Image (cartoon, rainbow, N blue to C red; front, side):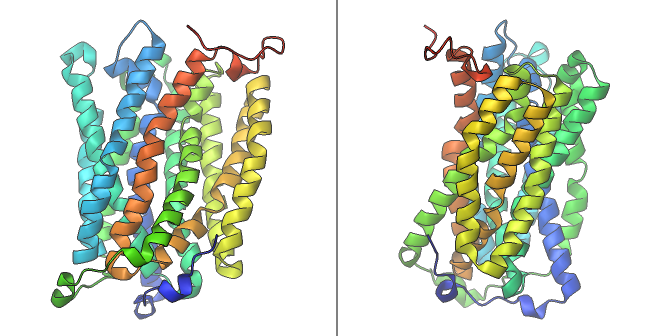
Length: 416
């Protein structure tokens, strides 16, 4: 599939910015976007520990499912945040929208990190945790559209793929930071200490950098100045329906893979019975290679075009899925777990920069932030919030399949 980006691309003010301003703009958008994703995915990394805090149960399965359901709640408000904050960015500029989403995310992080556990305040604990996740989801839904539009509008035309790939790279950087924090904490803290306060430290580390990100973003030049008379003129979506549908399909196809990767730390501990250190090392490797892959892929798309930069990596990813998972679930050691994460993450992430650039370039400036945010948030809400919940349930009801036991050639059966 190929989007006609040349005919639909809107003129950009990037040429008016100095190289230093362009670098600062991309850095600020990347830092803020990464911080928001850091706190969002860190919840997934510590799902087991958070489950024990807010959903104590004699069944570790029920406790984990409660935590993952709370994680999924954060996806319910993503489309709403995309529509409202994205629309605000299109009407009033990218910078104020990015500042608002960052402040809201910071509030959600602090609320979750500082809420006592179920043992202290009872049912109020999981209720407050869900409210905090709803706030985070709303903020992140709007952040994606405004930050992505800002990255593109700050870049020169022949560097858009590379520049906008920092949106995907920021997610990889966030995941790497979160996994490294988890690896560090799991090395120095006992399992009981991780359950008690270790996961809170991970969240608060991200919250502590929010004031710095706000300060940097406040000094950014605006890339989308809307004239008062232009605010009343609505751009119809119908001419861009093909772009929207194709964009939703492309983002949706990558969403399940992304959130399975975010689940690998939990999968390693809960299903493969690997140590916390090995599980977080695999998660760290997966996210670190994702940063390299998405940046190289974005830069390559500036040279060879968006189409093949999207198709080839996804084809390689589809080929590698089954062999890699058979290997890591059969061998169940550090080498197989880390190496499989590296290979799959490399192929899965290499096309993201081209995807983000192709969608953004195909939308007019007046509706770019909101439309991109919705194109991104709707499939993520449908698949991202349920992927880890469904995977955990399947691993529970299909015994031994996750560890390579085929029962002597007889297909695995559901528990009854």
